[in-house]
Image (cartoon, rainbow, N blue to C red):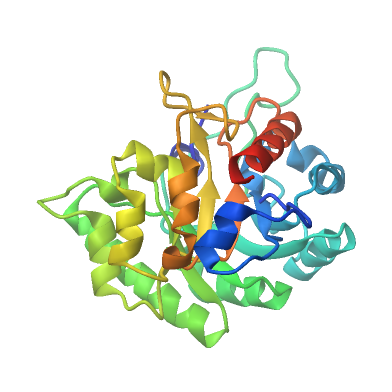
Length: 308
């Protein structure tokens, strides 16, 4: 399985429609119906480009109501302009809330040569990937035109202090452009942002050096847990700065993503701190999902039990 960072390096929610959720009622201070669980489409990376409409119909059929889009081998927004994609999602009874982009180029593989006598390469060349380093304004304009609310930097280099400094510049610039366009700019973590570089954590530098009106966070609950983060305490340190969650689970032995509710992540104390976090949208994600629609269905059903 590939996680998001591994994929980007190599390539350059659930709606509980009407169920009353006690944990969330406590977290938000009053009873309410949670309607904003969704899917991060990276979960469907292995199948969606073969049938975009069909895959989205299946996601809607499970009961999910919100979509967070990601990179597509078809280019653009799964082969569409942003307005077209937003309309398709809306026509299926869901809403397009957020879009993931790469922060800076990663090494991308060359096309894999075909076996002798084969008609095409075994691995096709990747389509051009827009990044915040090179295409900030274009990305911002496209997402804003489609009506999504959030622009999310899916990953950015943070292994050295030089990388971190450049990444901070990129994030600052993107945050300014997004704000002017009426978008909320978000950074999505992996484990690396919580590992020290020259005595400092990249996450802490992002949070302290870029103002909260320009940069907020989508906390990937699995990767943060794997990194040893005390998540409720992190919310206390940065209240209101986490409008998005990636609801993801991990197998304890392999540390690989699995269906929500089948791994070792304890979601209840995290969800109970949702008000402090400022969370507004919860996107289920399973990197490298072997059977995406079935896996998303299992996560949906397990989440009903977790929040009940």
